[in-house]
Length: 111
Figure 1 (cartoon, rainbow, N blue to C red):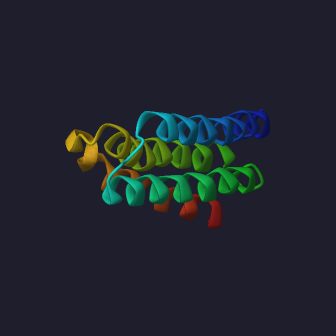
Figure 2: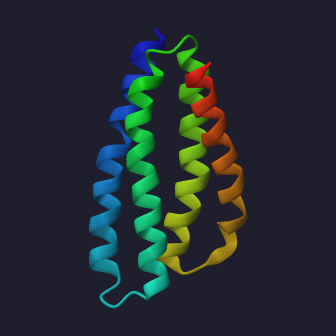
């Protein structure tokens, strides 16, 4: 059922955030200010949209809304996490597309 699908994917981002936080703490003893800002931005949007996935299970088309939010979180937050952790901006161009998927996910929840 779609509700179980959304609950499964919603439970995954929370532990992933914690693991990324621990990894950043041990990997970079002196990360640059820009890396910290990128990481905090990715973490904030990851957290907010993990909560939005809970609400996605109650909308008319939970599979569509959930899929859009998961893809958007992966592209937007993943690109920012990658750049913050590796200081390699190769995936930076994915972030705007991820943002569009997140907006589409919110619209799918609202409609």
